[in-house]
Length: 212
Image (cartoon, rainbow, N blue to C red; front, side, top):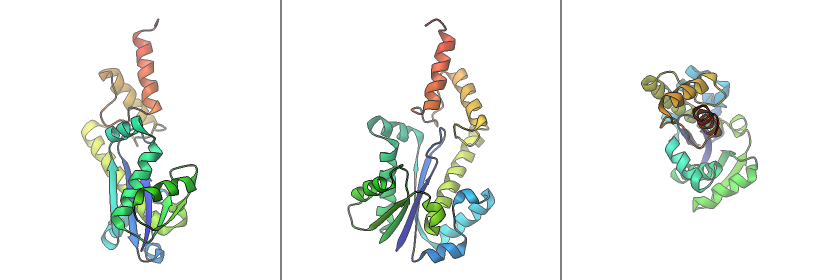
């Protein structure tokens, strides 16, 4: 069995980090379905494909909430957390061959890290851009992206427009600035250890105590 693993939301400041894996007998099965890098698909097409992939293939999903990310980063790094999540996905699916979309600038190091956490033997291939090169990783990227989008939509339904949740999004930044100004702290669904939050909290303190 071949497995692909990918994540969505690594760089986001709001909402969960989602890691997904898909297992199939051959990558041609995923290719015929139309699976490819989720970023190349429209939201409606991603959702359509996600439903088909989940019906047709074994899969596993882990959603890591901001509080868990903050707690993990007090002990280690985001890449360590991602390696652990990737390894857990692989343990659940028990494939023979795994393709990972590397979360580390050193793809081989990330693959070695995941392999060391597995507890059983399988062939690990850690690559940059694996979601573009391997349809099974593209399938995983689709599920991860759709699950994260659904989580963000639910947050928006409850709390108002939050944007994409990424620091580069003007709507997200404006929301955080307003929330911090009103509450004196970031919302519980924000990653408090992110530089974006630290900067905004620092700016708030400077406005409160301009001479300090």
